[in-house]
Image 1 (cartoon, helix red, strand yellow):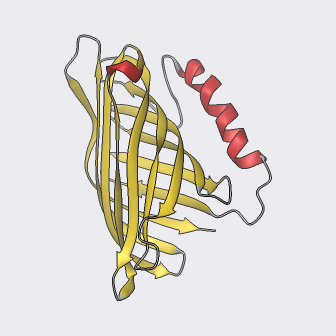
Image 2 (image 1 turned 135 degrees about the horizontal axis):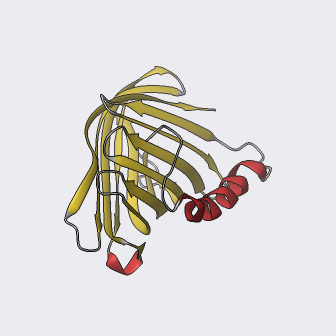
Length: 199
């Protein structure tokens, strides 16, 4: 499988993914804050692009993960992000949903799911050049579609703000998906290195 391709069922994901992409990046957004994130491991690469959709904390993003042997995941997400510690050291927490399309090349199966989850990011108290955070997203059978039975993704990262709006980090990510009649298939699991820039 080559980077940027989604095999079986890709057309179905595209019908959901492309309108969302247009909604995020074509609708004019005054003074919107946007983020680009890229990380790599020995056999996987992941990237995402997101932006503020409103002034009240609604955040939209699209992303893609490709593992050279195990498969790929495309996603489109909406989160409500806010400071969970107003008046103190900022802790940014997001609650939202992520529409995912997971293609497991090892077993030639694919499907979609609507995963719900939480994310957070903060900096070290007293030294804001150190940043850390993570997220967890889960989709049980009730919100899994097609051949997908359930989906789980979690990630944690720790990094250094080399620039005011540029974080370099080391992270750990695990992505697992189960299809009808199969055990959980691990699409990616392990350490990655990456950067995130805000603009």
